[in-house]
Length: 417
Image (cartoon, rainbow, N blue to C red; front, top):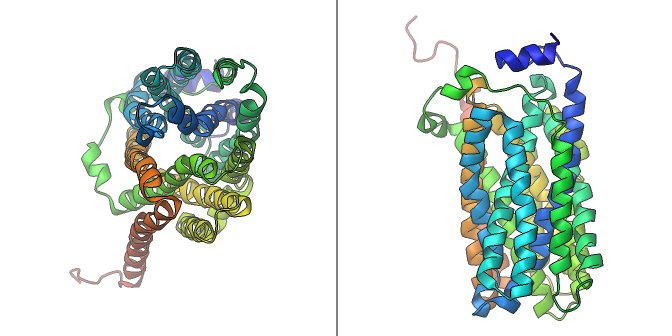
């Protein structure tokens, strides 16, 4: 029996890198690239299709908000599937949702049904929730010292998603002239099916009995200060990225910019989200996750400041690029912090809890984004972004000061000599 088979039988991770380790990480990175097109297509088209189909213009960004709700609602169920039946079962369930979103969205456009389109984007969110667990799956199948690099390697797949998604929109949106974007959604469904074929080759250990049974209650994990800080930083990084990216395509259109300009801006944004992953893992290993997260929050703040400086093409694009890099440092760094906050048998529970809170927070930001934009304008959306940013900085500073205090406390302080 090979080591991989033995580990699958016992439910234990390999003590040393197996022959499947590199193949797993590469397959997950390729699947990330293909599956990432799902999110890009929804973000590029959601508000625009919503603006055409919605009964009220204030509901234009609702499909994207429903997408985020789908991410939040399906994170814990996906974690439960992974815990009981293995991660690959969860991955294939997610790609099934990816095919479904494309088919339903195309049908919604043909039928001019706003609510069917919202239902489609909900399944798109379910797919995205599963895709984002790829990073943790890669980290789980390598030794601890290589986890930050494995995590960031999978995220590199998003660079190719940043090219594939917008180009998919640009080259297919007019293929069915009577129904704008219908062909795009059908193409996206086909890409999701290809991703499923790639994931069939992923070989990960089945969950151990201890993992199925769980360990500490979720409440005990959630009360840990480090976990709280990791969740806050991850939630704010993702929420602000989603908050601004949801509004940006419609804001560009309202400012008189073309759909092609919007697509290119979104393309550079997604590339900026994932390109730093080529070296984010090394930065985390060298400087530590807290410093990388701090840099991410600073870049997010800078992106907001650039957006307030003007509304021409350069300002929108630079805002989206800085926002993308800030998201990468903030989110990948926060994900690395999460890996330090749980025991091995708690991994799927703790990781899915983290993602559930992150995506739930995103949903709040996404729902408010469209209303703020249509009612008060792009500048108000940008100003509001500074509030959660300040919360994340405060949480990170509090944890840092706690670590400094502990490091300065004498070993026997407060104890019995």
